[in-house]
Image 1 (spheres, rainbow, N blue to C red):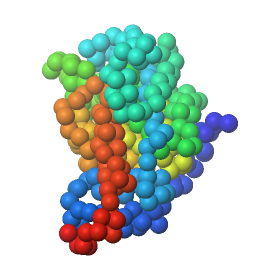
Image 2: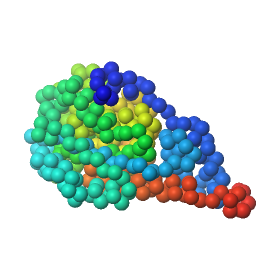
Image 3: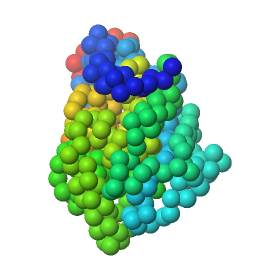
Image 4: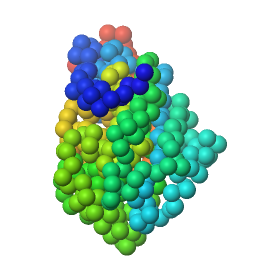
Length: 338
């Protein structure tokens, strides 16, 4: 049965968010305190290990089963010239993923992640959200369920990413509706549009916000009206991971924007998430502040497709390697309290 067979099921999942295992966190902190190093000397690596322990429910977490889920969809508003590329590139890139030729293929392999690609009705773009809701209720629930379906019990870590020409425009609209601010503060170059392209994005977001101004201010309504299938899919995957207490690594601006309507209403939705990186898209750092997330990396990346999040998994693996592999003071015969 679909995880989100109805609006009520989605709302119930968002209201009943599991929390991290407090006992595992305490045990992980105790282990950190016993390792042969000055307290706090490994900085955020220590925090990451404790975070992973809390969500895996064990003092010594591992990543033996890690997955990268890349969800693809197309958008009707691209007819307004908001992207440097045509919508057909979405399907072409999905083909490249399948052939193993994309950056995410290389990065997921380097990070030891199982890569899954979910293409959602690429031949049927969402409606143009300047004149209609992007999705009806059934379409949005189906996209949420498709994302949730890629999450399975037993995963130790989930990386989420997306592919969808024009979707940084949808992300800007979601952020502006969820957190306020002008469209110009949220819209950026995306795939590389010039100043004229950014102006077109701003205008499209302004029209969309005006058209939906009187719509209900709920996570589901904002997501279905201003999002896209791949964006709703990311939200569904993250929400299902939370139900299963699987830690998540978010990618860039679009992946994080998928959570904006949810987090604006229920800030705790990001408690099981790490921000893999801060992308070069100008709105991303602003969005991370709203989400309460501190990125692990900042390398000027703006590719999407889960690339920055997959790269960050190497940092997480390093955190767990030190946490699990270092000797304790007792084991090493070193006096406590370096």
